[in-house]
Image (cartoon, rainbow, N blue to C red; front, side, top):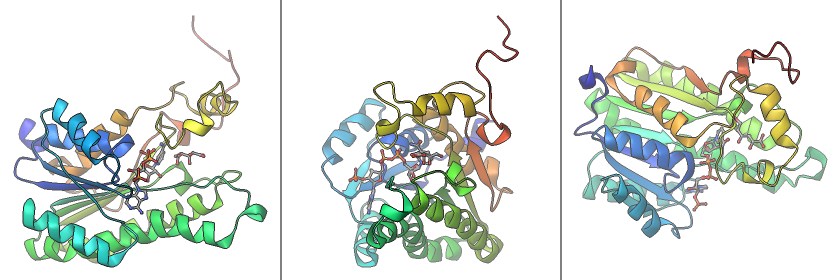
Length: 265
Ligand code: NAP
Ligand code: GCO
């Protein structure tokens, strides 16, 4: 059974993996034996992230490159190929969100979110897929969202990107599955990270909405998403393709919940 989830000898790149959900994914893939590579944009968390991974016995290869810049992606991936090896598992995790009502949002803001959350997964995948295809083996995991299927007030750019990423995942599958690449998405629900801190911390009213919409009755933890990524990165998912695995505590199954309704003491 362990062999199904054994990633020994595999090189995994998690974009944006220096903290948050990406780091949780990196840690679980590292514990499964993968050689873990992570990047971020600012580069200011690389030393701290190396220390964090080391606590789990993982010698992470951490570098800085901008996933929206084709030349910088090529430089970063070339460095990974030289220092660690060709990428076997790609997790397109890097992402941003801007919470701005449509009428107040500058087009530049919209384009920036689309660039990071939708175009960048294409850029990075185009850089690594040819070698996966040549080897007839590879795993690509695109980080989608509840907003791959729902809209929400003030997140139009993010939802446009994540909705598009769901269908980009499907199209990568149509073109690359025949070469034994498995390309899937993960759709996290509401997860406690820096990205959601503005709508979670300080007794924010958004917590009531998350509790009403999440049957599990809690915010998700980055580790909840990491565990799902292990499945999609391993042999266990070799016939799963073009699928978005929602890690959402039941949000997509639920219209809503009235506090105290049919609760069992
Ligand atoms: P986060 O804490 O904001 O981390 C995002 C990461 O992406 C950071 O490491 C950031 O690097 C990196 N990044 C952003 N732009 C980049 C660029 N141009 N080039 C390289 N790296 C870049 O986010 P998170 O909450 O962990 O979310 C991770 C992913 O899950 C995102 O795609 C997000 O949309 C998705 N997601 C999150 C939730 C949630 O509830 N948290 C739910 C569903 C989906 P810097 O730190 O250097 O900026
Ligand atoms: C928001 C949140 C969400 C989560 C996630 C939900 O403002 O609604 O940030 O977008 O990040 O994407 O799946």
